[in-house]
Image (cartoon, rainbow over all chains, first blue to last red; front, side):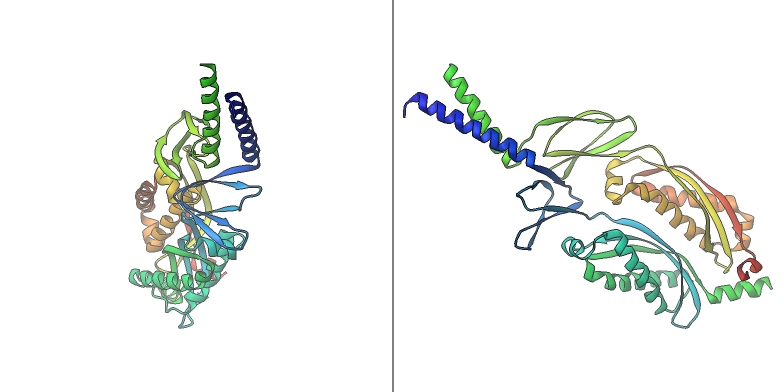
Length: 185
Length: 181
C-alpha cells in the first residue's frame, strides 16, 4: 500500500465515521441525570440498571432511560375526620414530604407517582389515625406524628415511596369541643 | 505540509467522533438567563457553580443549567378552617409572597420549588392558629401575625427562600351556633 492509498483509506474512514456519527446523534438524545435524581436504564431482557449522575444517550436502538426525582415533594392533607380508638370524633390535618426510596419499584408500580402516592397516604392516614388514642397536647401530637409516619410508611413500602418530616398542623378531638361548649354555655 | 495537515485534520475528525460517541465532549452552546432568573450549572450531574442573569457557555451533552425564576411567588389562600386550642373553629386567609434567594438550596428543597412557600405558610399558619384560643385571637391578631411571619421567615430561609410579604387577609372565629348548623 503506497502513501496515496493510505491517505484515501483514512479519508474514507473519516467520512464514514462522520456520517455514522451524524446519524447516531440525530437518532438519539442526551439524558442528564443530576445528583438529586436516579436514572434507570431498562434493558431488553427486562432487567434494569441504576445510573449514577451524569449524561447518557437514549433513543432509537438504545435501551430507554427513565429519570426519577429523589427530592422531597411537599403536600398537605387537611381536616381528615375519623373516630379514634376510644370512638371520639376527631379531626387531623398534616403536612409532610413524600420521597422515593426505591426508584425502580416506584417506577414499576405507579403510573403517576405523586398523585397515586397521595391517594394512598390519604387512605392510610384515616385508617392509622383511627387506631390511635388522640391526645391534643404537644407531646400527644409528637407521638401521633411518629405513629402516623410509621403506619403510613408501612403501607407505602411495597410501592417504593415513603413520607418524612410529618407534622400535625391541626388536631381536634371531641373532648376539646365538649370543653369549649361547656365554657361558652 | 499539505499531507501532514490533511492527516491531522482526519485524526481530529476521528478523535472528535470517538469522543462524541462515548459522550466525553460536546459542542459549546450559549445559554441565556433572563434578569429575573438564577441557576446552577451542573456538569455530569454534579453542581459546579451558581450562575446569574446573562450569557453562559455550556458544553452540550456534558453540562446543563437548571434555572429558577426569582420573581416573587404569590400565595393567596382564603376561607380555610382550622380548629383552635379551645375546640372552636377559625376561618382564615393568607396573602403572602416569597422569592428564591439561594438557587442551589431551592433546587434541592423540593421537586417543585414553587410549592414550597405555600406549604410553609400554610403549615406554620395552621400550627400557630391551632395553639391559640378564641380569646387570644380576639385580643392579639397582630401578635399572631408576627409569630407567623417569624416562623415562615426562618423556615423559608433554610430552603433558600426569602419572605417578601405576609399578612392575614381574613380571620374570624365561628360561634357555637355556626358549628351546630
